[in-house]
Length: 461
Picture 1 (cartoon, helix red, strand yellow):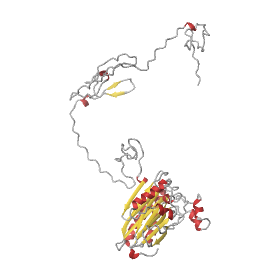
Picture 2: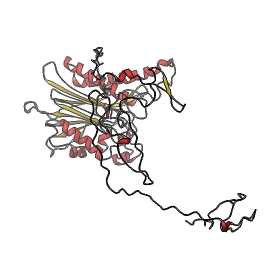
Picture 3: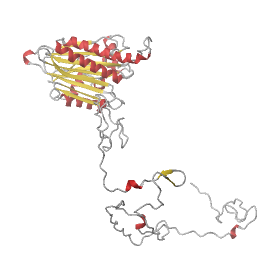
Picture 4: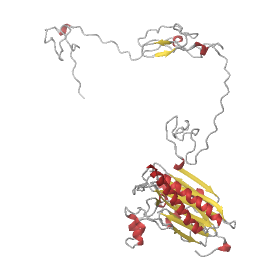
């Protein structure tokens, strides 16, 4: 980049008539003033730094009188030094025993520049040196019980800086980092069942939910159940829909099985109960006086549901939507199986013989669901099926956030750990990790239910 030339006389205006000058002018164009007669100012020596001959000895801190309010610190006037011109700085006494300005009565104000009026300090606040006994504090109110979906996080430590405390709004008071919500990652393990749910890497919230439980049949034999729900993202409040459906279905099964209801009938009733719970969310939206509006259920809360029950040597599955159940035997030399059929556009094309499975699931419309729970569903058609495996294995109940990365039964069997029946929670964590490693494009939820065959009562598959 070029620079503009500077005039030799070092002036920008005539010293006689203040007429602006051009570079190289020797005389003023207005009054004829001889610019060459103007003495050139001598440049001052450049002194960017000041050489200090010897290091400054920092004096010891003055002792503090036990009754004094001063602290063991140095004051500016205590230390020698020089300014930027090399001259000694003046020393000044710094008072530590009282104000350096005329005292002002407490309650009056002192005025500085006139912009602000500051309350004068009350000297009585600094007279006493003995600690004042604290007044007995009023008893704090008992803390409210933490909600299952909104835990108290005011005393939690920030996961980002590991220094600040988390405020009640879910953000760190130190670094401002948003903290993970409870539903971002959930795990639960009971005897005979475990489940893990994760938000994934692309979604801003987890719209999946699950319910796992263990109970007994009337004869005292154990029964294990797992429910997994996937909120429909294009609907309103999908996270609430999945949570309501999972809770309602789990509670229905937990109550029906001990009464002796057949597990397959209990599964059907559980799906109906889940649908009613999701429908009630739309009814809440209609409390604004629009209950006669025929379009008030449009885009209502919605979700899919899939579940399994292991009881009395039977494996019962039920579903609406495209969440799935896989059967993976402990003996990996025997074939695994997918036990559900999707309520989806791709499944309909395959069932109608219009496409093969590879073509249908390669289509962009493949995952458009044709069945779901919600007030705007066409018709509730719960699917249930009963199986009696003749060998031990593990039941995989999952949303499409997992099976998108292990779609076929053989693919799922390859990623399920070999010790899944003995370590269901660890295996569920491994499966969620597999989906995250694959991209984590969706919420991921999986429940694992080990199925153990009693050799005395083994039957045919």
